[in-house]
Figure: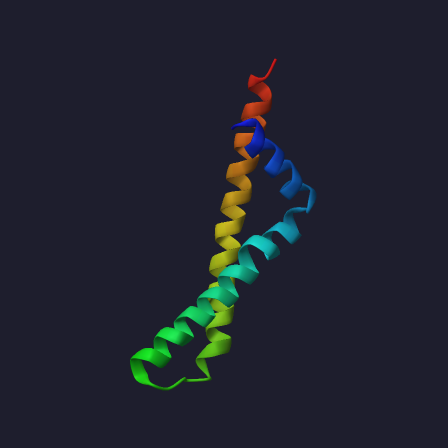
Length: 87
């Protein structure tokens, strides 16, 4: 892990795990993919099925949670490994 990556991770780590998961997982993935799939649906079928929006929000938010959680754990391992390598 480079020095810049380490500094970036330290700043993000200060948010705390819950805020990190929300800010980098649940919100961007949940909202972003819901909007994207809504646009695709509208372009493909020329209509929106509004009942699917809450379902998409829940499913894509869960996907974002697991992605961000995996990223958090991976960055923690990399950060700790880089700290042990430094004299």
